[in-house]
Image (spheres, rainbow, N blue to C red):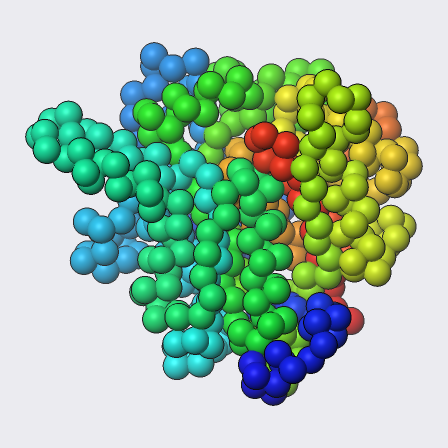
Length: 417
């Protein structure tokens, strides 16, 4: 069926087209590929440690989730290195893995057959830092520094598109952690409208002096110096999250097409919704629960159909309590397994929610829920998976994400029979 044929369907029929994930690419502090990341995550091996990419001794934050073993020269052509910053290089590596994972040839993907929509939040700070350093050291770079602010958010989308000759729908969204789910939903919409394949997700990172300074202004970063005691969501010891770099890239296509060509299918993007928190002081509840309810409704599922929740888990006590209330209200006390594997790698901004979606799909594939590491006793009302992985019969997972400023997103992924 051609894109034109797809557009002739009624809008309601297009919205019902099942869209699946057929490619994954991961770059994370505890694994520079899908299987390396998954092996480390199931075993509870983390990637948080002292910041090494610059001298952070004068900062209140000393820990981060860094890809300490990433050497861009080993993974990318030398001609690309002067044109790209670290975030973009990581995104290109993840995209290459995801596209190769689909089993599609470059000819199948090229041209208008494939679009790219990615999320970003803080990754462009490093490019801006480099341009400002040029300004300070050489002078005359004002225009370059100014331009960096205009385009650093969509840079991953553009570089991936250019490198692989992907001319379909494109775009970038900025909503911190929540934006990582929003772009997957936008990509799904493009597939339903007729684009055969969409590259989506996000790779982010702001681990440079300027980026770290900006992140500390939120007041949400952990000041801890012990990697095993720094990121402790849902516990009395929570003092904030650990910043990190990395993320995941996914390739989406219509389920019918994927089945016809014999593709490996990780799962279906079955439901999604986004909401915005009410004005502070209004007395109204946050919008996270409504986002989850709407995502479940679109998937045609009820709370008992969800086998595991991948929590936003920001490790800010007030926000953790609000998320815990949402989970109890939806599922009942200890009514669903909850996990936050991001405690192993840190909070990846625009790359975090795509990494959670990829992790959820791998959990569905293997019937294993990865643990939330380092945390002590959570609230009695939460069935938080900790201490080690949990095997289970998994059919559907709910991924939650919030963004600084009141963004909420929820996504349901489902294993196909």
